[in-house]
Image 1 (cartoon, rainbow, N blue to C red):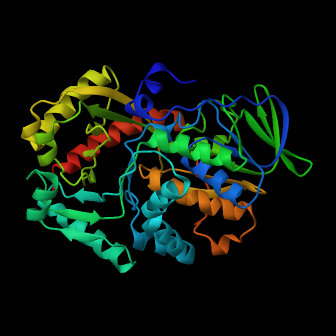
Image 2 (image 1 turned 45 degrees about the vertical axis):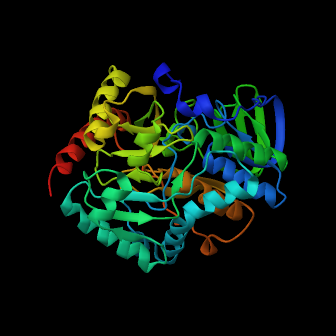
Image 3 (image 1 turned 90 degrees about the vertical axis):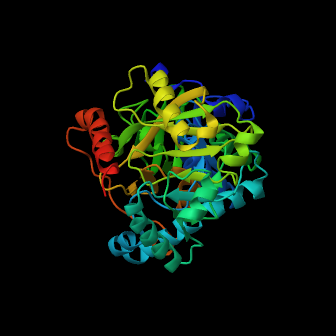
Length: 432
């Protein structure tokens, strides 16, 4: 079960439009498609299926947007973290090419979906910028710009002078800019997608954790504490939270992902004078540090940022000090910023930093391992999974298939690997 540190109050919970909680499963429900997980990819899958006339039931163990979808920084980023286009295409061939195109267009597709469905999620398509934190990292920026531009993305290289103007700081050295990115209130997006689903006939059941899935008589039987859902097809979209509520739900998937706690923070609203200096164009920013430095504005002109900790003890107070010093050094106009909100949630990491997309049985689809790029990616993947569930051949979709790879001694790895990797990233961050 979840501890208090997983359910700390967030800025998004404080500001997202409210949602009337849906009832739990009661008795037996028969449906065409059952979706496990009320986050971005599950809701996007359900929405696209409903648009095509399919009967869909979404089963959420807690409440819509409770997991990583409602707890992240809300940056809409049209790239992967470490999986580069050349490597994706080399590994997966034509399916990799289709997937790269999906990633390229994923930010625009999210904002188009928001506009089409009239979702109030504070969406700002102001662009995404990845500045180089050391001059030597500009080599990486140039390589990424070249790779994505070659595939039709509007990415371009920003030189040092423009970088300082864009950020309001001379702490970075230039970098990659993509105008299709931006930022949203992620919990508001999840709730908005849920409302769009319900308007099209999707049945959402909250407080309905799926404890186990079994195939009998050519149908999938999903057991919850209060009933059963029987479906032709299933979509498992619980990512890093797959094993949290039931160890019997797809244990192979749960053991193939390392849940890493990601901390988010929000300052008090900036003054007008500060706003004119700090990222005046309101872009989403996440740089080339392994121990990532990232920030964006919300609707109330708070800087929404965050950080990583090797040990969670006294996390909020320690992060206020660490990230406060970091922001003050980069943006002296802020002074020492004060933070009104500090919260966290899990992201799903894989060993090779690439998500796995698979079938766990006939008409049983799954993906996991967002590796910190789940916002834009999830919405676009939902479209592809909906098409696959509706019968489109995988050979026509942007679904590079690969099996989950359970990690030996997973319990120890998920405890000790994240802090060890963070120390390695910090060591690398200080070197060329």
